[in-house]
Length: 107
Picture 1 (cartoon, one colour):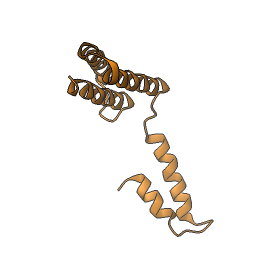
Picture 2: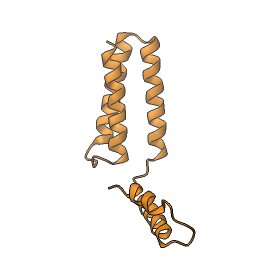
Picture 3: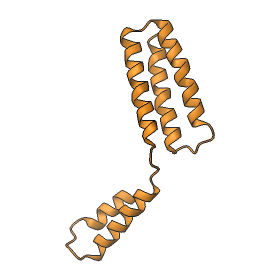
Picture 4: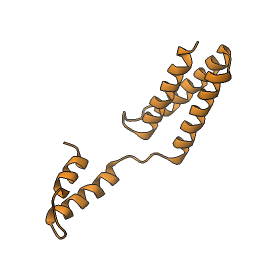
């Protein structure tokens, strides 16, 4: 069971002052500390990559799409590197690879 589910169950039906509400608050604090935070540069890179892929799919030639797919693959490989599977960098790399798949399927 995930921490969010446990916290929600602890809160359900409880009134102010309940020790279960205190437990739920502690669980939510723990979740915030455990969840990896994504650097804002990753969000910006993802947004720029999505915009570039959208333009390439709408207006670009097959060469443009292939070039962008190659660049995004290199960026994804660089970010994924030796990162843990659920790290923000690995998630960014996965998102970029999805864009690459869309670009390549349009060829």
